[in-house]
Image: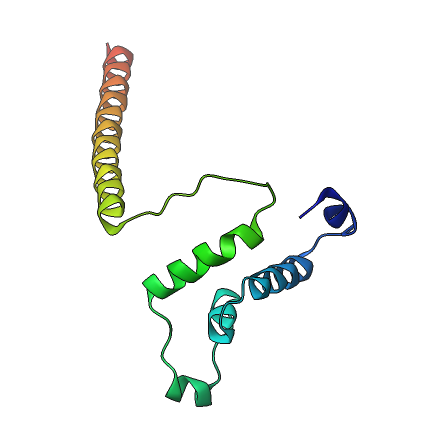
Length: 124
């Protein structure tokens, strides 16, 4: 989008953003069901009986195809998150959660110890 295109939207709201998003992904020449899926629309029951939802891989490729149409800046570096890389991130998050839990337990123990010392000082 150029700055002039952005300026014409004086008041940005959710409907404007959704409408613009839909228009931009149509320009990327995605299939109707892919556009509907990206917009968060639910397929009518009749269509759902005949068409299955696109796979994650199909939607990833469709999104990457639409990405140049969605960008505000002229160029941007894109990286695809592989399943292996995602598992690495999840494992790192688990390790961090474990460290945080251990630190919280130690902090609780220190606070209890402090309260115990204060209590002992009071009864002396």
